[in-house]
Length: 49
Image (cartoon, rainbow, N blue to C red; front, side, top):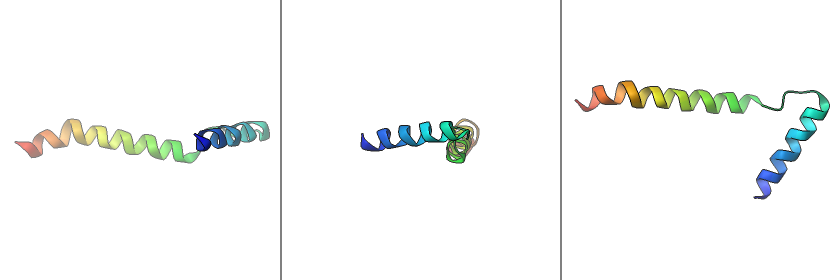
């Protein structure tokens, strides 16, 4: 819970400075999630057969 409050405070501070609120880590997390999804949908069924 404390981490959420701290993260929200950091986001507001970045927005106040004119930076993008979404950092690079969000895009990395999105890419990892997309890669896992593609693996689960396409590669995994081939391996199971």
